[in-house]
Length: 99
Image (tube, rainbow, N blue to C red):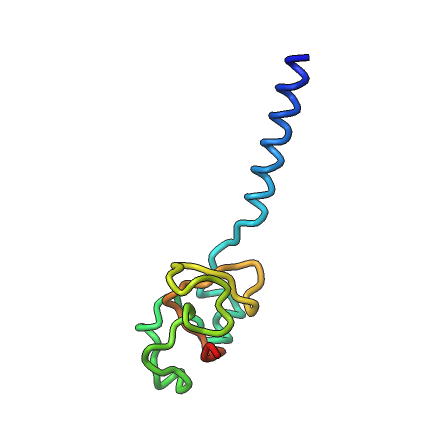
């Protein structure tokens, strides 16, 4: 019985670990075609306003209406890049003011 209990606890713990790994999102690569199309950069201070006229100082992913995280989070989800995280201090040309 002790062996069965140990086995069941191990299986349960392994399942929880796998669920946690599945929920973890990869970070968006700036070279991803969708990121390139939207002018995404991990660091908004590197945005070239001549190439991205929609950019304005003070716009960051973490203060965008689409950012799925807390304002203090270094990385968070974005529905534009499903399954990948964007940098809180990043920017793309879909930035929208939080309401």
